[in-house]
Image (cartoon, rainbow, N blue to C red):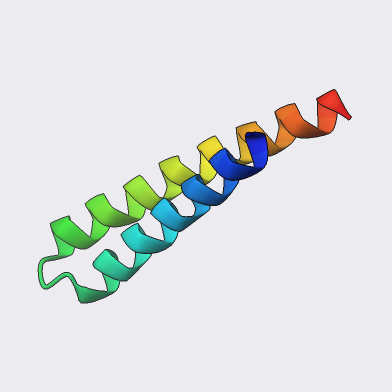
Length: 54
């Protein structure tokens, strides 16, 4: 389950990065990049939890 969550969070981050690349407004780009970072932070938290459990 942790691996599934990690993968889902990373995919969400990648989607946000793709949206940022296509953004025409700088404020939109910044918002997408912030969301990508938040998804990656959640992925890192899940990964840390996984390493503690093993």
